[in-house]
Length: 168
Image (cartoon, rainbow, N blue to C red):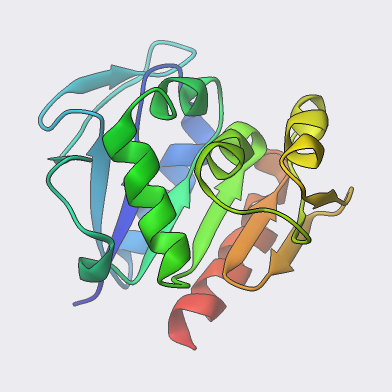
């Protein structure tokens, strides 16, 4: 069974972790990758999930794709060198990377976005533009191996696009 990496950190958005986690589990083995292994991370509303792996112990080569949820968690994710390097390696390998809402912060921190199209929650538009991306106000934007969405309302479309990219 193919494996998917789903990043996890404190202050994650519950919808942006739970919906992709269970949808992906239908066809894939999903690893919850935190900064540290076997650590409990707490969402914005107090919901807790435990990481199955630490970002310093996994390799992009072992996964079919990566999902980056939003909330405020990407700000914590990008403080970890191992997590930034993991995301960069996924991008270098051209593996599908889906990012929703504030997940674009991770892309801005570790991927070359020059000339690529993305979307996100509107408040981080400037961060992505300053990283060289062309920001679009669309439900889902696909630019090579990057698939991005704006808010939890865009999750169904983003997940369909991500699943299609994983199957191609």
